[in-house]
Image (cartoon, rainbow, N blue to C red; front, side, top):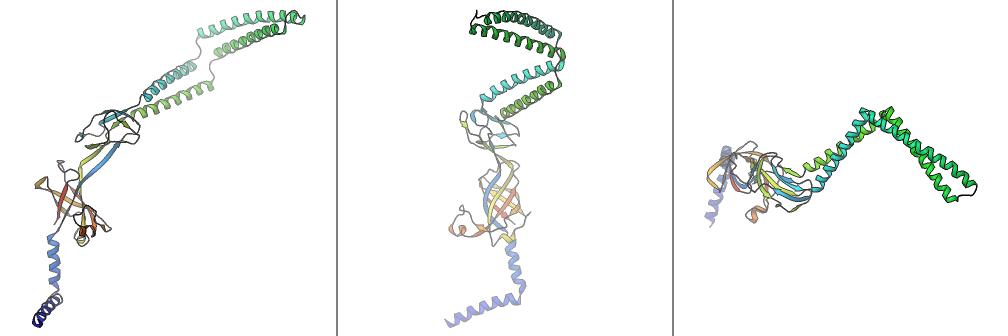
Length: 330
């Protein structure tokens, strides 16, 4: 036993002294470790965007299915808002009337309108003269107590009405002869502009009922079906861009020093075991974290790791989000 112990101590001494006597040996070991590269597993991810409805309503149509390839601006579906359709009709009618009135003010009064107003003045004056004569006669009768106070009040009210009607007809005739005042024209123009803005807003809301793809991509999932109620902000579909693809993986802290941004990578997936996809390290986490729960064993879950992103060439779009991937970083 003593002899075995001495031999073991001798071996350890040689190994320790070899590091001191031959420093190049330690460096060669490190180079060998680096040349082996880093191998890790991760998950394929792609850039996604959620397409939501700005307005609430029942989904009257949904034109896409999962797996469909959409172009930017392509119609996905639409929500039903009959109240907005009715509001557009009302706004258009109000705007037509306001524009017609503005045109009348700007063009001035037509001769036939002035003649009609003059005829109304003559008719109102005739009624006023008759009412005035009746009022004078009944006023005398009232003083002589021939008619009652109630009867006299009725004749006086009729006289006041005829006088007011004549004054209104005269004002109307004078206004038509003088033409519209500049302030009237400006006020009507302002009303037209306000109605135009209201109509534009309603049409904008109506346009929001049509949900379109904000970018090109593949339909990954649907949140609703035709006929269902969609609340404001409800996500109709999730789109993914297969061209913007990467593998997310976690590298042990002991190996993170072997990585650098721009480093070449080789990626393999189970779905295509005989193909190798080219990749490149684009992001290396700058803060250590515990491995996520998706790690395979308890030891890995308690190890400190760094998050790494490897961009992968996916020109054919065959790599799908969620695929497990093996990455080798030479």
